Image (cartoon, rainbow, N blue to C red):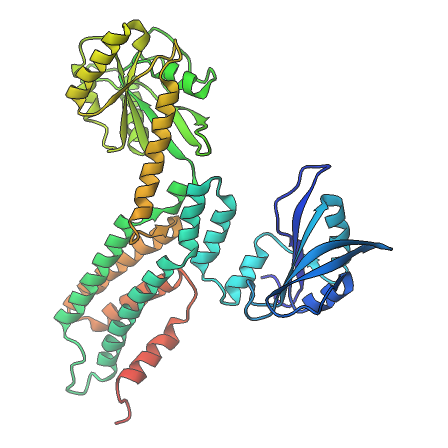
Length: 464
């Protein structure tokens, strides 16, 4: 582990293009922060705790630049140590010259080391530290809001409340073991199992009602669905404005899942096309079966599906059957090849399709490049609506893959603890419940043994 006694420094702002100037932030943290600051700058006034001071930063002989010094004193800084930030409007070369002077008394910070110190000094729990990385990686406002929700600590607070209740029960069970020879029942077997069942339900609700951080931090996937030759490949090329997919009048040309980034006015998504859906029977070739299943798997994992129907054909019975195989509720209906029909016929055909499928159809033509802007706008609005829906449910929390895995493991341990207690194996049940608490504690940082001892001695008059 890196030494906490070192003083570290680094540029903590975005890189500037070569030959340009802009706001650069240099961050310093550690025991030598203030001696270093006194060496490299002169404040206009003595700087105070958690205050901003105008200053002159010394770059070289007779060369100073104006800047701002943000002074944060331990333990109330981001890292929990003395921390200084220099905000300078300079070019990268000037920042490098300042850092060179700083590195005479400090070392360059390793990736994530400022946040690592914040975690080790108790300024952030592990969940919040992970959220910092997600904020840095956010590419748009929707992604940023998801990461900020993780950083806010609501998930940690929810876990803390749950863990405290589990510790209360564990304290009672361990007290039952410690005083087994006394005719005192601290908690009945049925009552203990009832509480464990509530813990399981709350964790299950947390898993089902939470938003996977990766789902929002990563770009949403939008899939094109429809029968072979429904015009999906042409539509993909038209939306992406590139020849990403092979276009052919022959059916079932697309075999693999083809993807591209669709730019939507500040909200990008992954648009993909896959093999056309088709009825499967015993006579269907193995390669077609595999392509059909791969398409369904990809579509049912997407955030949004564009279900395409060829507007020029009359028989849509198979289209209706294939639509039923898509489980995703978020679907935009698209009528392709509208250029083949007259405008009034296209509008009438959209109404007919709407009555059959129960959803509004957007007329499009990849060949004529018509309806594409309206479709892009609808995709953008639907993705924002889905994300806004997440924000509207304030009880929903943001979790990541690590959280989900530990919560699933906790559920298994709780189920095993319940079984042992029902078989009157209180000692084994307590051990499993302790492991459950340790798993939840592992999501943050906590010494569980001291907590349990404190609870046992505070709730019961041990020496009486």
